[in-house]
Length: 169
Image 1 (spheres, rainbow, N blue to C red):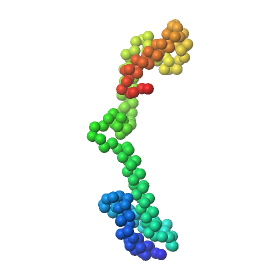
Image 2 (cartoon, rainbow, N blue to C red; image 1 turned 120 degrees about the vertical axis):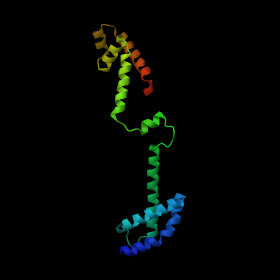
Image 3 (cartoon, rainbow, N blue to C red; image 1 turned 90 degrees about the horizontal axis):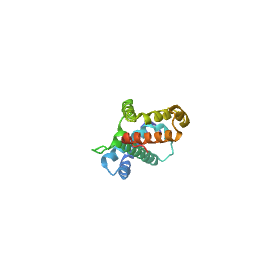
Image 4 (cartoon, rainbow, N blue to C red; image 1 turned 45 degrees about the vertical axis):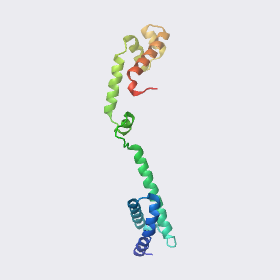
């Protein structure tokens, strides 16, 4: 079968394809779009059609797969796009482009929270954060190890309270 004969046969099936498409879309315009997509794919992939194959079944398979792929793409897109008028902070975070600007603001908030700590809490906390062990901090500050642990624990709580907008667990 040559391309011209194939195109004529495909065009003859377009009426039955429209009624089949309406079963999927429930909308006349969407059904027409689906038929058009199916016909374009069928003509584009003419070389994949084998003589003796049921042309109508082949076209229906193309249409079904096209509909499923479009449905998945639309569903996936809608999960990322929020259509609400009032966006919540969590939706803003998901939809916002990630860049270094927000990291700068976070670091500024962390530094501000650190500066609110008194020296008694700031030094053990930052030393622990830098990788020192409890006993090393205790030796350096010449205080008991239990006091070091308590001060680090209290400093963490104060930092969490200062940075509560970031919802630490």
